[in-house]
Image (cartoon, rainbow, N blue to C red):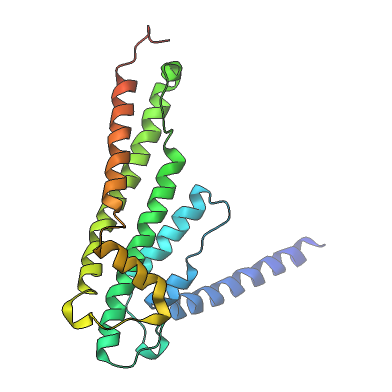
Length: 206
C-alpha cells in the first residue's frame, strides 16, 4: 500500500477514536454503568485486576442512575434508600476481593532461608502485597458501615430479591459470618513476620 494511503487510514482511525471516546465517557456516567464494566477474568493478571479496581472505584465515586434503571425493582423511597446502601456495600466488598487478588500476585506466602539472595526483590514484593491488603482493610470498614446502614430497623422486613446475593452478603456481615478484617489481619501479620525474617538475613544465611 502506498505510504499516503497508509497515512490516510491512520488519520481516519485517529478521528474515529476521538469521536467515539468522548461519547463513551459521556454515556458511562452512573454507578450502575461503571459496575457493568467490572468483570472477573478466568485468569486474572495484575493489569486485569487493576482495571477492575479502576472501574469499581469509579462506580463508588459516581452518582446513582434514576431508580427506574436500578439493578433491581424499586417500588418506593424505602426500596431506593436500602438499594443505595446495599449497592455501596457490595462495591466495597468487590474492591476488597480485587485488592486481595492483587496482593496475592505479589505475596510469596512463605519465605525460606535459601531466599536470601533475592531478599531485596522479595521485600519489595511484600511491600506491594502489604499495601494491597491494607487497602482491603479500608474498604472493609466502608462495607461494614454500609451493611449496618442497610440493616437499620426500618428495613427489617424489606428484602430486595432482585439482588438477593447482595442481601446475603449484608446478612453475613451483620451476623459475623463474613469478616474480612480477620482474614486480612492474619495476612498482614504473616507478611510482617516474613519481612522481619528477610531483614534478619545476612551473608551467612545462605
